[in-house]
Length: 423
Ligand SMILES: Cc1ncc(COP(=O)(O)O)c(C=O)c1O
Image 1 (cartoon, protein in one colour):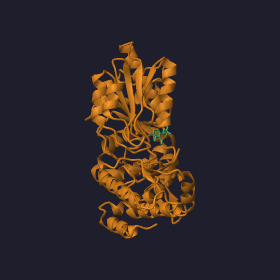
Image 2 (cartoon, protein in one colour; image 1 turned 90 degrees about the horizontal axis):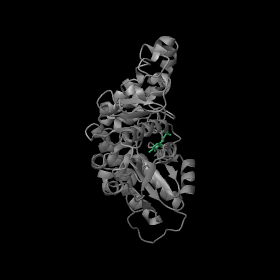
Image 3 (cartoon, helix red, strand yellow; image 1 turned 135 degrees about the vertical axis):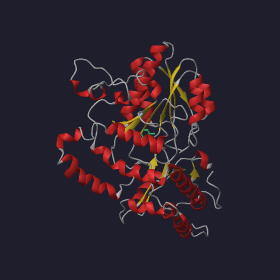
């Protein structure tokens, strides 16, 4: 089905006018993939990462060997954390660390937060979370609640949108220890109001932990300015750190020394090489570490952070808004005639860097798209997520990808004869 618009030509004009277009050359591409629309799940590798990884084998690892620990590896978790904080999070140095996976850091921070809260006020035994939060976030708090005898309060957001400040206001009370939410909802892509929600939680005496997996590197964050207490995020999406790259955690300076994470290991000790008899925690951000830092896994994200630093987060966000806006427009025109529904916000101010589309056949459609070299992802029960990584995705990829969705849907009977907006 065609709507008379030459989407490829429109995309070409937008690419020609894109001030960040030249950054696309920095990424590894292969001829087989014609549209990569899953940068919100796994970012493309950078060309520079090839040399960085090979160079590491011959240089710091192969040549410096164990001396590498004194020559930068021991400092890497905080040095890289500070870079993520400066470039992407609006966080002053000394509050961000790279370690573990998001899941493990969530566990450490949730436990640290609720233990400190219950320790100060024994009646503060509640955790507020939403039913549409990412599974790992829900599973971790369910585990901690069972372990520590806490109660969970569930916010039920509109799945096409996200948690609102009003819902948080209604959910928190003098019994709430912690509120755990995602900045950008993994399903709808809605951006939560960090400033308002954090303020509401604080008024109730609760701490707030933000999951930044879907915002870091694509949506601006201002952790210090918004008085956020704790945050976590992954680095394999918009920070292009590669599969299984370690995550980061943020703990505001004012909580250092008061919040203690539960996985006590030698790397979080005040004096790592004292080989002491008893654990004495570091009084800074290093306390969040447990075991040996994953140095190799930290290499690729450095290249992406350098690129984002050069382009600047405001420009990255502008490109993201332009890409998702184009995707919404193309979906309205090309896909709504087949009954495809927009399950993301129309307002770009509250839309992250992915757009979710719903159709009952999207599971099978996604499999066929992958065969054709068009790579979005599928989220049950029937959502296609179109993830647009601002520095590596072209408008041409968006046009090619959504045209391919229309082509795959075209043998199916349209749900109505006249196009309607994808609601
Ligand atoms: C919002 C959110 N939180 C957490 C995770 C994953 O956690 P981990 O890095 O431990 O696999 C994801 C993964 O996609 C996510 O989208």
